[in-house]
Length: 142
Image (cartoon, rainbow, N blue to C red; front, top):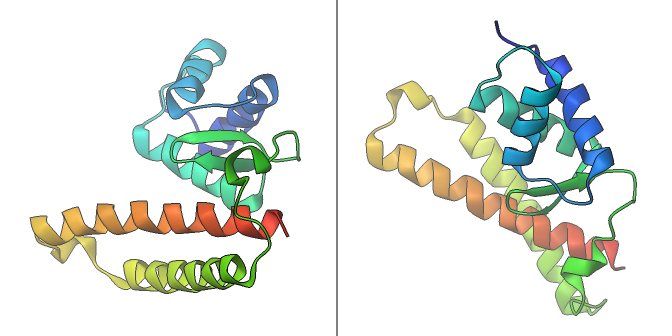
């Protein structure tokens, strides 16, 4: 029996509240311990993304998340970026580029993609996540 996305999100928030940093495997283990239902990789990834977009989870770095209520200081990761105009310009550029990439990726029909394009899509998503992480760290240090 499959678990609903809403149930997954509630369990993810509970897990993040109990741990300083969580990885997807931590979330998956928590779900297994606290629910008798299965969840797919897609459900887990979607629930994590939805919570991160709402600020209920903070993406610390690729594959590591924390509770999104200020219990984790992003400064642990971004110390050294400072408040220079260079850092702010880079953050703005990354944020704009990430938004453009998202629009492009959302407009593509993945069913009509070749293997090479599909592989490129995965790389673009990783790059976009890295840019968002860096730019959010700079903004939080302002």
